Structures are given as C-alpha cells and as structure tokens.
Amino acid sequence: MILCENLVKIYRTEETEILALQGLDLTVRQGDLVGIIGNSGSGKSTLLNMLGGLDKPTAGKILVNGQDLLKFKDRDLVEYRRSTVGFVWQNVARNLLPYLTATENIELVIRLKHRRLKTEHRRWGKELLDMVGLSGRADNKLSELSGGEQQRVAIGIALANQPKLLLADEPTGAVDTQTSDQILQVFREVNEQLGVTVVIVTHDMSLSRKVDRIIAIRDGKTSSEFIRRQKYSSVLDEMGSFLDQDSHEEFVVMDRAGRVQLPREYLDSLGLQNKNNVRVELEDGKIIIEPVKETEETEQTQEK
Ligand SMILES: Nc1ncnc2c1ncn2[C@@H]1O[C@H](COP(=O)(O)OP(=O)(O)OP(=O)(O)O)[C@@H](O)[C@H]1O
Image 1 (cartoon, rainbow, N blue to C red):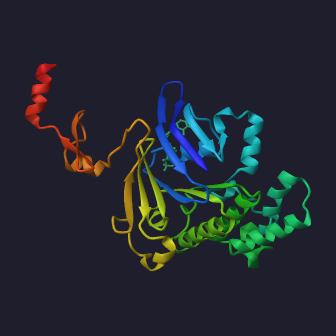
Image 2 (cartoon, protein in one colour; image 1 turned 180 degrees about the horizontal axis):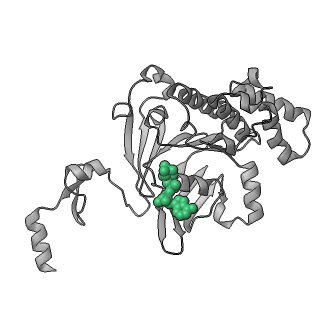
Image 3 (cartoon, rainbow, N blue to C red; image 1 turned 180 degrees about the vertical axis):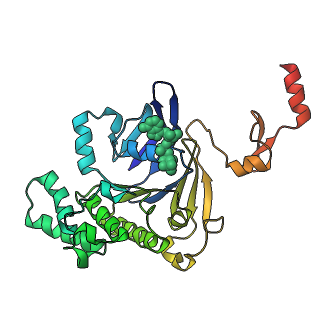
C-alpha cells in the first residue's frame, strides 16, 4: 500500500533550509494498522502530508496503492485526496461542521464526491455511524457531542468515500486515556471490517504499545520497527503494560544500500555516538559492530 524510498523533504524559507525528511524508507502492506512514533520535529506530520498528497517531497520515491505520487498533476492529486486517502486530525474542527448533525456531516462528504445522495449512500452513512459506535447519536449536532464522540464522527467522515488508506495525525492528542483506548478500538474495527490500511502518527506511547507494528522515526529517517510478539487481540489483558522488550521486538530498518540506523541507547552505551569508524565483523551468522580501540584510532590519525 505504501512504499517510500529515500524520501527527502526540504522546507526552504528565505533565510534557512530545514531538512524535515532525510532519506526515509517505509513499507506498509495493504490491510496493515501501523503506528508511527517519534519526537517532536522528527518529521511525522511531514511524512503524513506527503502520503496524503497535501505536499510534495523534494526527492525520493513515494508510491501509494501502486500510484506514483511524484508523477501526479494537480488534478490527479485532487482525485487522490478525494478517493484514495482519508484523514483524521487531532483538531476535529478540520473534519467537522459543528452546526450539522453526525449524519449530515458524513452525507456532506459523500455529496461532495457524488453530487446526489442516493439511498445506498444514506445506508452507507448509517452503517459507518454504526461501525464507529454512534448510531444512537446520529441526529445530534456535532456541538452536542463529546470530544471522543466527535472524533468518532471524524473517523466516519474520513471513511465516507471508502478510501484505501486512512491517515491519522495525533487522533487521540486531545482526549483522556480511556477515550483514547476507545478511539484506537474504532480504528482497529474499521481496519478489520473494511480492510482499510491505517497509519496513526502519535506521541502517545500508551497508544502505540497497543498497536502490533510501530515504526519509529528519528531525525527524518525511519530508525526502528517494533513488531508485537503476539497479536494485540490476544493480549488485551496486558493493557496496562508499557511498550517494552517483552511485548515488542525491535527491528532496525536497513535500506537497499545496507545502511542501518542503530538505536541511540546502543550507541550511548558503547560510547559510539560521535565515532566515524567502527569495526564490523561477520561471525557465526551474525554481524558484530565494535568500537575501535583508542590506540588504533590514534594510529589511524597519525597515518592520515
Ligand atoms: N511548512 C513548514 N515550513 C518550514 N518548516 C517546516 C514546515 N513544516 C514542518 N517544518 C519543520 O520540519 C521539521 C519536521 O516537522 P514535523 O511537523 O513533520 O515533525 P513532527 O514529528 O510531526 O513534530 P510534532 O510531533 O511536534 O508534530 C521540523 O523541524 C519543523 O519545524
């Protein structure tokens, strides 16, 4: 569903250039539900904007659903945003009109694409509200719903045109932990029932530990992947535990040229943070990376 290779995004202002993505690689299969985590400024929203066709990368490759986004003309981008992707934002006001009811909000999106609202569209709107657990609030105005309920409507709206890819940027940023769990559950259900691929960007470690596949972005590059050892559905009773080595196995991403980005804590523990050279050996089917001894470093400097 998603293939990014060596994706680069540079924001240029009059005085500065900001390298927001610096050669990011990412693969997401159709039907996956993945979380993307990373510190503030690591490039998560930039990536989501590229995937959503809201902004163009400076260089690299980005394919979504087999379509090359870099080859899109403006007209293709409008069609792509209308049919292939759906968005859920932290700020629900970006998706919703407060003076319309939940049903009207969903139907409005369908109308924008199909112009006329047919019976099957109305049925689909009802089905969606049911799926996000809001059939009982269908005729309430958005202003009468809680933050969590509004976010559910926003998910319904994002799905109204049956996108293949659902992108969510900090969808639980403005709600409490219990509501956040319920919203994640809605994402999980639509992922399972509709087969839509879901990508959720979040700071929220408590949310990410409940997702089976987590991709960590550091400095605009994918640095690690955590794959849950057991499927989430089989570990619901572990809900209170933190993302840790027991629940998730960490994978470091390797690009085609064989470059890997090692976890910062590993580098720190061996004092490798500022080293340019390390010793690499192949031993018993394993690649071993070791610090170069200080005496060897001195010799190297003298030779230079
Ligand atoms: N439109 C823009 N113009 C200039 N710089 C930008 C723009 N958008 C993002 N940046 C910069 O690009 C870098 C990555 O920003 P981005 O918003 O993608 O990070 P993020 O991981 O989503 O952060 P946060 O979690 O705080 O939202 C940051 O240094 C940011 O200041």
